[in-house]
Image (cartoon, rainbow, N blue to C red; front, top):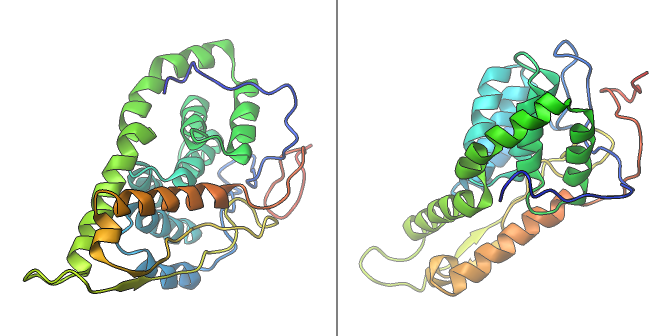
Length: 255
């Protein structure tokens, strides 16, 4: 998907769904969850590299290790994780853990909104409106390289290969018996985008009593993975939002 192919909205009846900050001195708040809350979710995310790296990134972020957090989010982004691409867009836009880079911030926002999330589209459009003509030209020049590495066309198959590989190792007999079941469940961490959304920072697949063929077979596996991505996308748009001025952490409004 080329960056230049961009959806336009006459009116955005949405608010930016992340807490914004003016500088790295006042970091963005990505989640209400504590380090221990996030750590407790890591085991449940095992085998889904998008979620694993996202959670490790959030663990680093809540402890102020922003360089490590960014590295983890980039790993998750390679596995089609739209949450992590969103987090990266805000970190680069506001200069959390480094100098602000609005070109990179916008490109990550464009990637995060690739599947059409209303919330992420709203953020992307706000950012685009604030770019200079020179910055927009840089976006057009650089965006294709990001899509070649992080776009769904390449990132989803990369993630699905890892998910199937893990399922293959964790279910079924290694001598040929293939009828064992595996139960995977988990709960989301509150606060996907801001303290007041009460939504999700991580979403988890629920594969109840799934056989190996259901998890990674040519047909059943595709169906389950399709449902998994649909659930991830659905959780991005939970809640009611409205147009508003970006807020700082703590609910203060920018002047």
